[in-house]
Image (tube, rainbow, N blue to C red; front, side, top):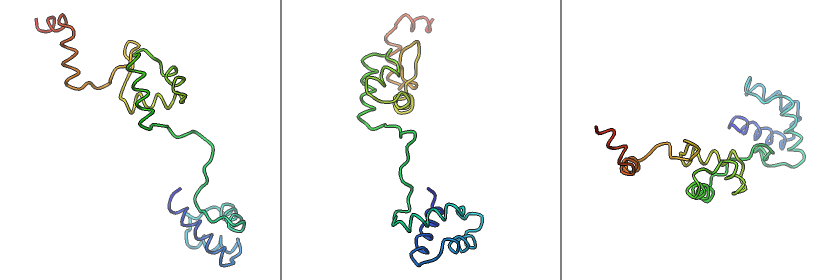
Length: 147
């Protein structure tokens, strides 16, 4: 909720407490806020809420897409599953941890920085130590590039 809507809700609450009628509140707010004024039906709805005793001017939580759960425990659990099995799929990880596939995908790609290469999870950006270690693991590759 932006601050303008919040401020207007507070004004509605104040004017309603002063005993102003819904139509008068709308007219006064339209004069002050102009094009940025809340819609007439919204003002009337908030007047009804104030009359019913509501004091909180913030939006109440609504059902919808859940926030991505990326706490450190979940990130660590995903990281451990990938370390145990580099070929584990996003779906398998989601089932194992009882999380949504979207949450697991977000953790793997955005938080851990992994991508799939040849059906295995690998870091997208290798550190200098990791790059050196990869060169040292396969001496035949090193010899091919040196000659």
